[in-house]
Length: 429
Image 1 (tube, helix red, strand yellow):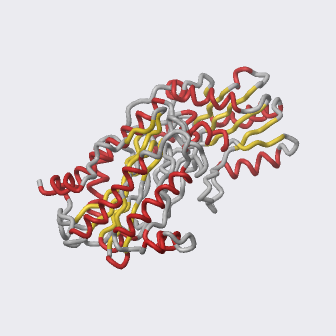
Image 2 (cartoon, rainbow, N blue to C red):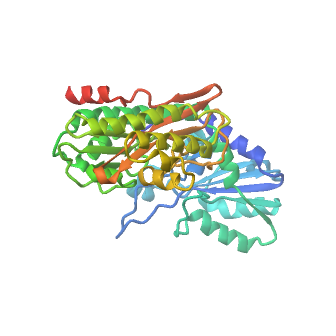
């Protein structure tokens, strides 16, 4: 692993919290991620299932966690199953965890090899009433690929039809929303690395540079500082492509006079950072670009203050929408009478600002949580207003990561330049 060792106490706490949420006489089963096929005999780089990592800290394929409440055999309160580290396997794939290493990482004292899973599973299921199964319950995403958790659920329901099945995802969502202090430190590290990459970019960008060259500078800085890579596909969008929300081609030449919208974030110990900055290719904003940029920045600063205990994403979005509407009038992009018309205002605004302001963050860049989840201390989310003017050939989005505290919020990307004067000064150095 590239990151500093995480103490097993974090994963012990996470499992203990889950243990208290599941019903009596229950078993919960959580699988590691599949190794995903690419093409030919190749696979994509392995990235652990976020829930599995949250509970174990284990970054190895073909691993399984059992959590058993009120099981007759007390040894099986929690059991981790891993691959047996055989010499032939290690010659081809490298080192596999020993039982001692898995115990040290996860804090789970009962570690077995994967070939023992079937017999132990049968024993704990037959002494349980409820079976908790996991799956990805992200509201905005449904994969057509039947991943391990889904395949296993189909098998186990057929084999044990008289047991009661429960959803594990809502419990893990509840737990993952509020970060432990150790998790916040990992996110801060991801943000620190992301900020470092932005400084590199500011000194690298110039007319005729290619978008993918900028991406390469970011990637190199991430890896150099111990990040696993990007937390998501980076967006390096110059010129009119800055109006495309999920532009990931990153293959154009950055032209003199254009802006570049860059949306990227490091993944450190599987925890995500997420920033967006919009800068001028030649190091100087035009007057019109400044007008729009400062409008977005004003909204961002005000919106950040709404990310506090008791609020929700929906409530923040309402405030941000009203602020954006006023800025659109000031920029000559909308008329006041249309903004004051309840039937027209949304249509007018959506032309220039068509997405929400915030999403939860953590082990996934779009982490567990809904738009109606009430903010509590320990939650982390983005703040990312924007204005996209297709007819003028540029869009501006600004984004920082905000930690909710008991008394308000902390901007985890506060050290990353965002004021026009700072951006122009650093680019000129």
